[in-house]
Image (tube, rainbow, N blue to C red; front, side, top):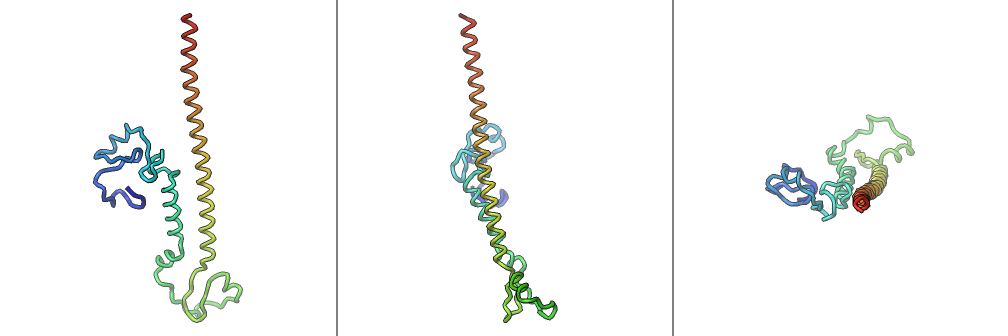
Length: 168
Protein backbone atom coordinates (compact mmCIF):
# COMPACT_ATOMS: atom_id res chain seq x y z
CA UNK A 1 0.00 0.00 0.00
CA UNK A 2 3.05 2.24 -0.09
CA UNK A 3 5.32 3.73 -2.67
CA UNK A 4 8.69 2.31 -3.54
CA UNK A 5 8.10 -1.38 -4.03
CA UNK A 6 7.04 -3.70 -6.81
CA UNK A 7 3.91 -5.84 -6.84
CA UNK A 8 5.98 -9.03 -6.48
CA UNK A 9 7.61 -7.62 -3.33
CA UNK A 10 4.34 -6.50 -1.74
CA UNK A 11 3.43 -8.28 1.49
CA UNK A 12 -0.27 -7.54 1.00
CA UNK A 13 -2.22 -10.69 0.06
CA UNK A 14 -5.01 -8.96 -1.90
CA UNK A 15 -4.62 -6.55 -4.80
CA UNK A 16 -5.44 -2.88 -4.29
CA UNK A 17 -7.61 -1.02 -6.78
CA UNK A 18 -5.65 1.96 -8.10
CA UNK A 19 -8.92 3.87 -8.55
CA UNK A 20 -10.69 3.55 -5.19
CA UNK A 21 -7.90 2.18 -2.98
CA UNK A 22 -9.88 -0.81 -1.69
CA UNK A 23 -8.44 -4.33 -1.66
CA UNK A 24 -10.01 -7.15 -3.67
CA UNK A 25 -9.26 -10.78 -4.45
CA UNK A 26 -9.91 -10.14 -8.16
CA UNK A 27 -9.02 -6.50 -8.77
CA UNK A 28 -9.31 -6.87 -12.56
CA UNK A 29 -13.06 -7.54 -12.40
CA UNK A 30 -13.52 -4.73 -9.89
CA UNK A 31 -11.50 -2.15 -11.86
CA UNK A 32 -13.79 -2.40 -14.88
CA UNK A 33 -16.82 -1.38 -12.78
CA UNK A 34 -15.11 0.94 -10.27
CA UNK A 35 -16.20 4.58 -10.55
CA UNK A 36 -15.00 6.04 -7.23
CA UNK A 37 -11.62 7.81 -7.27
CA UNK A 38 -9.64 8.02 -4.03
CA UNK A 39 -5.87 8.00 -3.80
CA UNK A 40 -4.48 5.58 -1.21
CA UNK A 41 -1.55 7.93 -0.52
CA UNK A 42 -3.24 11.30 0.05
CA UNK A 43 -6.99 10.49 -0.11
CA UNK A 44 -7.26 12.93 -3.04
CA UNK A 45 -9.78 12.67 -5.88
CA UNK A 46 -7.44 10.88 -8.31
CA UNK A 47 -6.00 7.43 -8.99
CA UNK A 48 -3.21 6.23 -6.72
CA UNK A 49 -0.63 6.22 -9.52
CA UNK A 50 -1.55 9.71 -10.76
CA UNK A 51 1.40 12.05 -11.24
CA UNK A 52 -0.53 14.96 -9.72
CA UNK A 53 -0.61 13.23 -6.32
CA UNK A 54 1.61 15.26 -3.96
CA UNK A 55 2.91 12.09 -2.27
CA UNK A 56 3.89 10.55 -5.64
CA UNK A 57 5.55 13.83 -6.70
CA UNK A 58 7.53 13.98 -3.47
CA UNK A 59 8.52 10.32 -3.71
CA UNK A 60 9.75 10.79 -7.29
CA UNK A 61 11.67 13.97 -6.38
CA UNK A 62 13.32 12.24 -3.41
CA UNK A 63 14.17 9.21 -5.56
CA UNK A 64 15.69 11.41 -8.27
CA UNK A 65 17.81 13.27 -5.71
CA UNK A 66 18.90 9.98 -4.18
CA UNK A 67 19.85 8.46 -7.52
CA UNK A 68 21.80 11.54 -8.57
CA UNK A 69 23.59 12.05 -5.26
CA UNK A 70 27.39 11.84 -5.36
CA UNK A 71 27.45 9.26 -2.55
CA UNK A 72 25.39 6.82 -4.62
CA UNK A 73 27.57 7.37 -7.67
CA UNK A 74 30.67 6.72 -5.56
CA UNK A 75 29.14 3.55 -4.10
CA UNK A 76 28.26 2.27 -7.56
CA UNK A 77 31.87 2.68 -8.61
CA UNK A 78 33.13 1.05 -5.44
CA UNK A 79 35.98 2.69 -3.62
CA UNK A 80 37.69 5.55 -5.35
CA UNK A 81 40.32 4.34 -7.73
CA UNK A 82 43.83 4.51 -6.41
CA UNK A 83 45.37 6.41 -9.30
CA UNK A 84 49.06 6.82 -9.75
CA UNK A 85 49.73 10.42 -10.79
CA UNK A 86 52.78 9.36 -12.81
CA UNK A 87 50.43 7.73 -15.36
CA UNK A 88 48.79 11.07 -16.22
CA UNK A 89 50.20 14.33 -17.56
CA UNK A 90 50.17 17.12 -14.98
CA UNK A 91 47.42 19.75 -15.17
CA UNK A 92 48.00 23.40 -14.52
CA UNK A 93 46.40 24.69 -11.32
CA UNK A 94 43.39 26.28 -13.08
CA UNK A 95 42.47 23.01 -14.81
CA UNK A 96 42.98 20.98 -11.66
CA UNK A 97 40.55 23.06 -9.57
CA UNK A 98 37.79 23.24 -12.18
CA UNK A 99 37.94 19.59 -13.17
CA UNK A 100 38.50 17.66 -9.94
CA UNK A 101 38.93 18.26 -6.26
CA UNK A 102 42.29 16.68 -5.64
CA UNK A 103 43.98 16.30 -2.32
CA UNK A 104 47.70 16.42 -3.12
CA UNK A 105 48.46 14.39 0.03
CA UNK A 106 46.46 11.48 -1.32
CA UNK A 107 46.16 9.52 -4.54
CA UNK A 108 42.35 9.57 -4.31
CA UNK A 109 40.37 11.70 -6.75
CA UNK A 110 36.77 12.68 -6.10
CA UNK A 111 34.26 14.12 -8.58
CA UNK A 112 33.33 17.77 -8.31
CA UNK A 113 30.17 17.87 -6.20
CA UNK A 114 29.44 21.45 -7.20
CA UNK A 115 28.55 20.41 -10.75
CA UNK A 116 26.42 17.54 -9.42
CA UNK A 117 24.49 19.93 -7.17
CA UNK A 118 24.01 22.26 -10.12
CA UNK A 119 22.54 19.41 -12.16
CA UNK A 120 20.23 18.43 -9.30
CA UNK A 121 19.05 22.04 -8.96
CA UNK A 122 18.35 22.22 -12.69
CA UNK A 123 16.44 18.94 -12.57
CA UNK A 124 14.44 20.20 -9.58
CA UNK A 125 13.60 23.37 -11.50
CA UNK A 126 12.50 21.33 -14.51
CA UNK A 127 10.41 18.98 -12.35
CA UNK A 128 8.73 21.93 -10.64
CA UNK A 129 8.01 23.56 -14.01
CA UNK A 130 6.57 20.31 -15.32
CA UNK A 131 4.44 19.94 -12.20
CA UNK A 132 3.11 23.48 -12.66
CA UNK A 133 2.36 22.65 -16.29
CA UNK A 134 0.56 19.48 -15.20
CA UNK A 135 -1.51 21.47 -12.70
CA UNK A 136 -2.51 23.90 -15.45
CA UNK A 137 -3.35 21.02 -17.80
CA UNK A 138 -5.44 19.38 -15.09
CA UNK A 139 -7.33 22.64 -14.58
CA UNK A 140 -7.94 22.88 -18.32
CA UNK A 141 -9.16 19.28 -18.48
CA UNK A 142 -11.51 19.90 -15.54
CA UNK A 143 -12.87 23.07 -17.17
CA UNK A 144 -13.34 21.16 -20.42
CA UNK A 145 -15.27 18.42 -18.59
CA UNK A 146 -17.38 21.06 -16.85
CA UNK A 147 -18.11 22.72 -20.19
CA UNK A 148 -19.00 19.37 -21.78
CA UNK A 149 -21.38 18.63 -18.92
CA UNK A 150 -22.89 22.11 -19.24
CA UNK A 151 -23.46 21.58 -22.96
CA UNK A 152 -25.06 18.16 -22.34
CA UNK A 153 -27.35 19.66 -19.70
CA UNK A 154 -28.21 22.56 -22.00
CA UNK A 155 -29.06 20.19 -24.83
CA UNK A 156 -31.36 18.18 -22.53
CA UNK A 157 -33.03 21.37 -21.26
CA UNK A 158 -33.46 22.66 -24.82
CA UNK A 159 -35.12 19.38 -25.80
CA UNK A 160 -37.47 19.60 -22.80
CA UNK A 161 -38.39 23.19 -23.69
CA UNK A 162 -38.86 22.22 -27.33
CA UNK A 163 -41.19 19.35 -26.34
CA UNK A 164 -43.18 21.66 -24.05
CA UNK A 165 -43.60 24.19 -26.87
CA UNK A 166 -44.71 21.52 -29.32
CA UNK A 167 -47.34 20.15 -26.90
CA UNK A 168 -48.85 23.62 -26.29
